[in-house]
Image (tube, rainbow, N blue to C red; front, side, top):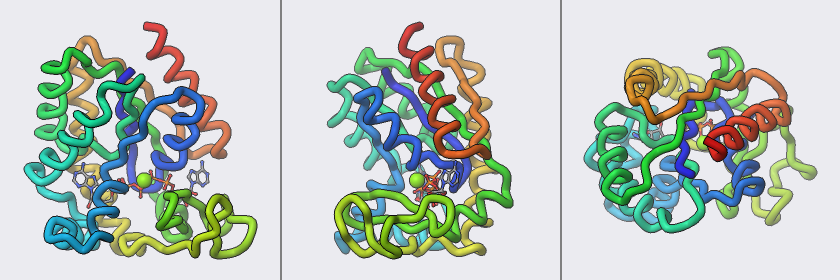
Length: 220
Ligand code: AP5
Ligand code: MG
């Protein structure tokens, strides 16, 4: 099963993907998480990525495609892939399609999580993430048991450098201008189903709706 999880910043892609991985045994591939690990390594590639990410701009397609194509190849022999944050432009989607078709493992569907702009700003500015295990919290919506400390591994939580109000507005613009056309692109593909889920609801309700979507994609 190969599924893309799409949605604006703060829609809940990472939060929900972690829950779906446990339930469906698929591999969660988040381009943002992969890029942040590269940034943290201090490599030249990481420095290039940081210039775009910290400004809330999309990383150029050639850089994204080279990093993500090898991540997809490494993980494509397993039971399934849940892609989060990739593809985010039409050229990235075309490149992924070619790669999956060549491997004989085409895409099954795209699940789009919608969320209002106001909710997004609140979720992003209140988000805290674990730099070690990747667990995601929110200071009021989904707080850790002990303030500032990861429940899972005890590491001090961080506020992502791109989680400011100004940057999130820039990221929202990038989503509307460059990523929404990817949904239109997949609507033209007869074998790819698009499932839209209202992400403005409580976390458990969104998980239920997405799990039902995964079930229906798995049973097609
Ligand atoms: P990326 O890391 O993908 O960021 P994003 O798409 O902006 O999405 P987020 O991770 O911010 O949000 P999310 O939907 O995962 O929400 P979360 O579950 O954390 O990309 C970062 C940057 O990398 C990009 O800006 C770009 O520069 C670059 N990049 C990455 N991929 C690229 C690509 N393919 N091409 C070009 N550039 C690329 O939840 C958010 C908060 O809300 C959390 O605090 C959470 O606890 C809370 N929350 C979640 N769900 C709920 C709920 N239902 N109710 C209440 N609170 C909730
Ligand atoms: Mg995320």
